[in-house]
Length: 344
Image 1 (cartoon, rainbow, N blue to C red):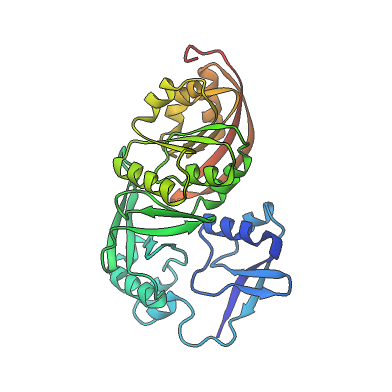
Image 2: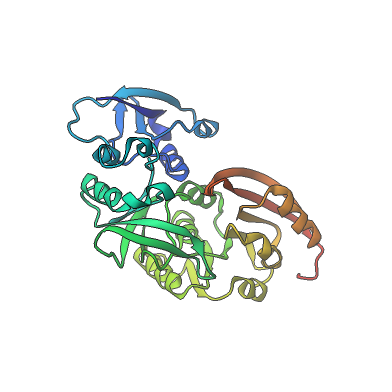
């Protein structure tokens, strides 16, 4: 029946490892999680050695005993996709509620319908499969998705770290790949903090922070009116009114209007975060924290901050995933020691 690669981890680390595997896009959804005594085994599509930097894990192989039929959606495509292209079939994809989102290489796009149908058959709870047709684009950060199997889904919901998130596929961006990061940041926030999420989307960071921290106030900003509508819905569904303030508008204007108000600023807009650093500095208090998610290297971020007259310290840095071929994404936690700029 073949062998499957698993990440073996002590039960107490299981949830953290699951989030990291999802973030790196290597967790398999077509093979069940296993248990061996006080360990949990997560099936993965490839060995992600990076995980071992954060949690003690072991990579093991196991036979898939007692399973009949197809082990993965890819097995359903043997004989359909030419052998020379079969190994190019994606091993990872996202399942968000009733939909799956998959990125299909260009040389396999003639088989996208067959790929979608195979996923639908393999995951009975799915109603639709969408293929990414390009990066998230435009000022509204709209994903470019193409329905390749099933029926159009205009709204669905998924769970992340105990919270529920509703969204509209193709109209707003949603992903679980940053679930580990969102929880990491939420666990840093202290009671009494006032937080600015400059590019909130449907509320991934804002909702988790409000859910996990007592006496916190999060201003969640997005320029996409559809995203703000779902942000408000997610705040309501998770019973967080009074802890999250949804704002539809330009993040720079909001940051300058509320200058010196925030102990923490979150900037998850990879291609443009650096161009908003002036606004983040205006909004954050001295000794406050800025979490920057960007495609730029640390040197570029620090040069921009120094030009803006800030004395800062990077206290955490990590490459978290590729958002495009050969284009990694980084996170920098930046402590602001002092600002000497006119933006104050």
